[in-house]
Structure formats: C-alpha cells, structure tokens
Image 1 (cartoon, protein in one colour):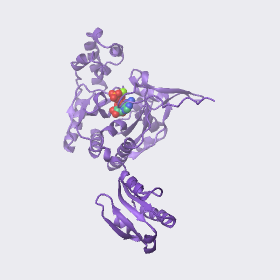
Image 2 (image 1 turned 90 degrees about the horizontal axis):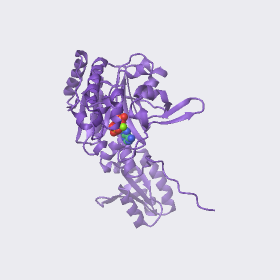
Image 3 (image 1 turned 60 degrees about the vertical axis):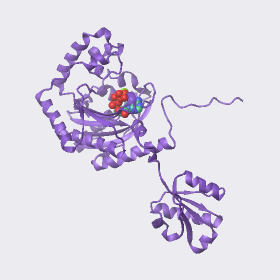
Image 4 (image 1 turned 120 degrees about the vertical axis):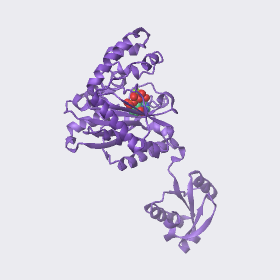
Amino acid sequence: MSKPAPLRPVKGMQSMYGEEADRFAYVVETFERVRRLYGFKRVEMPVLEQTAVFARTMGETSDVVGKEMWSLESRSEGSLTLRPEFTAGIARAFLSEGWQQHAPMKVATHGPAFRYERPQKGRYRQFNQLDAEVIGSDDPLADVELLAFGSQLLAELGITGVTLKLNTLGDSESREAWRAALVEHFSAHRDELSEDSQERLEKNPLRILDSKDPRDRPFADDAPTMRLTPQAEDFFDAVKAGLDASGIAYTLDPHLVRGLDYYRHTAFEFVTDQLGAQGTVIAGGRYDGLIEALGGPHTPAVGWAAGIERLSMLVDSDAADALDIAILPMGDAAKAKSLDLAQTLRRGGRSVELLTTGKMGKRMGRADQAGARFALIVGDDELQKGRAQLKHLKSGEQSEIDFADLVKATS
Ligand code: ATP
Ligand code: MG
C-alpha cells in the first residue's frame, strides 16, 4: 500500500505555537482587561451568518462582498457566509435577539474572521479580530470613548509609533454631494485609473480614495474633500474636542474613507509605519445607517475592529507565559509528594512545571530553557524534613524551605 499524500494546511490559514501563539494570547488578554476598564460587555457571536447579513450591510460593491466572502450553500437555510467581520452579525443580533432593550449597549468580542484574499504578511484568509461596538448612541462622546479604548489598548500592549488618523464622512446629505463631486473629478481621468477603479467610478467612487493601486493614487490624492452640513460639522467638532479633553493625539486625514458602505460621520484608523501596506491595526467609525439596512429602526452606532495577527507582530516577544517554578523530584516518594506540592503552588497562583524524567543535570537545563524563575528540588532527605531545596535560577541562590512556606517564598 502506498503512503497517503501528506496533508497541508488550507492556503492563508495558520496554526501557531510558541512565541507567536504567546504574543497572540497576550494581545487577547490585554484586550479583555482593557475592555473591562471601559465597561464593554463581552458578547459571543456565531461564525456563520446568512449571506444577506453581509450583503445588505457591507454593500455589494465592497471588496469584501464582491470577492472576499467564503460562502456555502446550506441544506435548509440557503446561502450562508463565514463572517468576514463582526459588526454586521452583532447588528443582526441586536435586532433578532432582543438586544434593543439594552441600548445603548457597549459590547466587545474577538475571534476568527474569513476573507478570500491573496495571503501575504499581515493578510490571511482566516485571521482574527478584536471588536468593540457602541450600539444605540448618537452621542459623539461614544466615538471618543471608543477611540480612548483603542488608544489605551495599544499603549498597554507597548505598541508605539502609531498614528490615529481621523476623518468625517459627514451625514447622508454631505455624503451625497461629495459623492457627486468625486464622480465628476474621477470621470475626467477615467482612462488613467486602474480597471478596478473604473468599475468603482459610478457604483462607489469613495472607494477609489482608498485604492492601493499606484495608478489611482495621484487622482485620489487631489480629489475634492467633503463639504459638511452644519450638523455634521458640529458632530465632528464635538469628537475632536472630546479627544483633546482626553489627551488623545490624532491627525486629520480628509482622504481617509472606510471600504464599506455603511459608515457615516467619524471614520478612523490607527496606523503604524512598521507593517508596510498592512499598516492599519485598528479601523472603524460610525455606522448610523447599518441597522436600517438590515430592516431595523434607525439606530446610531459606532465601533472598531483590530487585526490580532497584526497587533501580535508589534508586541514584544517576551510576552511569553512566564514559568514560576520547575519541580524536580528524586525518587518515587518524592515524585508523589511533588504532585501535592505542585497543586498547592498552583492553587496559590504559581505556574508550575513538573520535570520528573531524565538525569538531574538535563532536567535543570530544561528548567532553564523553560525560563523558570525557581527550581524546586525534592529528594528523600528533604521529604523526611518536610522541606525542599529552592533554587533561584538567575542568581543561583539556594535555600531550604518548609513545604508550608513555598507559596510565600516564590512570590
Ligand atoms: P485592509 O485595508 O488592510 O485590507 P480592511 O479595510 O479590509 O483592511 P477592515 O475591514 O477595516 O480591514 O478590518 C479591520 C482590521 O482587521 C484591519 O485593520 C486589519 O488589522 C484586520 N484585517 C482585515 N483583513 C485582514 C486579513 N485578510 N488578514 C489579517 N488581518 C486583516
Ligand atoms: Mg481588506
């Protein structure tokens, strides 16, 4: 019988171990801690939604709906799609799960999202997002609080060199007028634009501003900017004043747009110069039109999403889980006792690894390699005395400690 062909991972889908996985976990743990500081409640969302949830909200002309969705035909429920983002599904749940009674609600979640894109550094077909949303508030201070949350998250992750780019997409009225001005501007250069942008011209000219194609950049860069209605102007002023009052720095970028149709007013991105074209680490804005697009009542909302893999690439590698104590028992009786000690230490909040096999020198080497702060040596002698040898690995200092005092001695 011939050997079966080796199995390979699906293109653009990663498995992680070691340092990479540690940094990923560190990003998620930091997010979980910071979202509590801002009073965002955790929600859990399904990975599959009806395709219409995304098609209706993200816009047929968006890259995501147009070419990046992973869809499948279900036997009983028609077309379903693996979520390419969280926002649309959360908005769906807001309507279908009776969450309207909690409005305004501040929610956060994280998990995998799927987009059929060309895989490259910082761009995968299964990637992971952190997500934060405030649904049911038209207060510009909701935008400010979300931005403060994003900014503190980056600071606590130790990520520096990030710029908050800020823009407003206006209300529907300012947006329609701007759209017309953009169609006029780009039509004058139609033949010089990329094929994609020629196609976008009538359907979604705002997207040309967001184009990464060098043929589009010159025309995108000197495109007309939006003229705001007084109401839209007031809203944006309030967001900027709130950021100033919160001590959060930002750069105005009149050409910043979001790729999706549902945005109004505030649009923002936290951008680093360290990841090339994949430099956007947090992106979001206000989406006052989205819940209506799903058939719900007018519901103002604002949110952001962040790519966990991109954030992970920017955090320090010593985010690895630290090991407090490696226990090295000698002999069967000591081995049994070491199980008891390990449990006592873990219940006391210490991380413990039991190294029970191999020569003592080898085991010491493994304890070092695992980055343990202490090695705890238990032999027959120690058992008799009810004590163990505790060695601080960095200094080499060693002392004999009572079993009962080990938690205290390893603080
Ligand atoms: P980009 O312009 O880089 O394609 P986007 O505008 O499509 O990003 P959003 O829809 O705003 O991205 O998603 C929010 C965040 O999710 C992005 O800022 C990024 O950090 C991350 N992200 C989006 N797509 C991918 C992907 N394919 N792989 C990894 N991370 C991604
Ligand atoms: Mg994209």
